[in-house]
Amino acid sequence: MTAPPAPGEWPWSAGFSSLAAERDYRVEDIDGGMPASLRGTLFRNGSGRNDLAGAWFPHWFDGDGMVSAIRFDETGLHYRNRYVRTDNYVNETREGRILYRGFGKMRPGGVLANAFRQPANVSNTSAALLGERLLTLWEGGPPFALDPRTLATLGVEDFGGKIRAFSAHPKLDPVTGELFNFGIDYGRKTTLTPYRIDSGGLTRLPPVSLPYPVMNHDFVLTERFLVFCIGPILANPLKFMLGFSSFDGALHWDGGRPTLILLIPRDGLGPPRFIEMEPFFQFHFANGFEEDGALVLDLARYPDYVAIGDALRNFWRSNFAAGGMAALTRLRVDLSSGAVESRIFKTGPAVEFPRVDPRLVGRRYRYAYIADNPPGRARGLQQRVTRVDVESGATVSHDFGPDGYAGEPIFVPSRPDGEEDEGVVLAFVFDAAERRTAVVGLDARALDAKPLFVARLKHHVPFALHGQFTERLF
Ligand SMILES: [Fe+2]
Image (tube, rainbow, N blue to C red; front, side):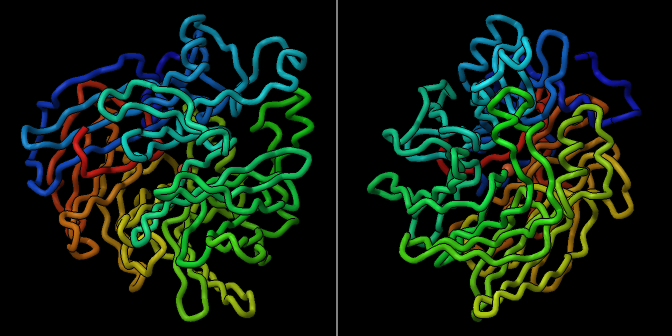
């Protein structure tokens, strides 16, 4: 039911409550000061509505995409939010009940009401500026284009019919300006299609057949490759297509199979290469690069999809138990022998949402920013933002406890040619005591110090997933 959960049991849980209102206001309740160098717009996307007709959705990923835009300009800070006008959002809002299948939700009416229906695009996973349009991303289908100034939905963007699925983690090469992404199609064969977007538009690179249907969320861009770690989280397309289960219900972890490291040449020339290693699962990579004949991949590595799959399914009433959650891990893949070495960084438990300086995507880098929990914390959503020096292993954390829950940390450089950690780390932090969300800025070089600023919104923002900062003012 939609009644807020009892405080104390899952203290973070009210952060999943839906936010129906669409707001547009100047933020006045600010501690500290905005650095003069911080000018631009932060876009974030996530499930804004997680319940309907008195019931929570069966899975966190079913929620309707809602974009927040925070503008930092010389007059201060401005907040705006809008739902993406997907068919799912528009029609279920009008009817006040579930009409579509989702990632976990099913249409009422059983098998016949669900058979041969694809999950509705809820466009809830990330937001990326492309030229004059803001794209909201969802890996099962094409993006929606929004006006970045008003957040009004303009329509579906399928790049002239060239794409069907378009993942939520495109990678911008900071040197060449090319944007890479991929989509997975589950047909008679499962194919992964890489895309390149440059000044000439979108180009499809040769599709790669996967040996079985899998769910894959993110990838790494290096100077020569798109790199995937395809864990054995298998989908059963028949069970799904015939309407016997949701997409989530058709997924299962097969720990008897390897994780496949897949290298696709980013110039589209040459065959893909598969390297087998022991099974693991990841949603997200921090970064990766090539060095001395090896491929270095840094990721939030889960032992499998069991604990995290269960936690996401029970989101509002999950313990988010630390056991089975992710650790920040470095894989070093020897490109001649295919041998893989693994190293775990010492951080707190429940690592997620790794980000790096956008100027160093695909390049050797030093600092990853993650959300994690204090050491020894056995359960709960992440309360810290931690900077990890991936060269020395040293960490510095900012702990938002006891009532604060931090989302994805986004690093914003202070100046274009500044050093790697010269900048601000921006995060949305949900205050479970006040049931409000704050936009918090931390000095990346003094993460454990008092925040540079805490800008309290008038309301909460349901826990979001991903976003992007642009120096442009919208
Ligand atoms: Fe993601």
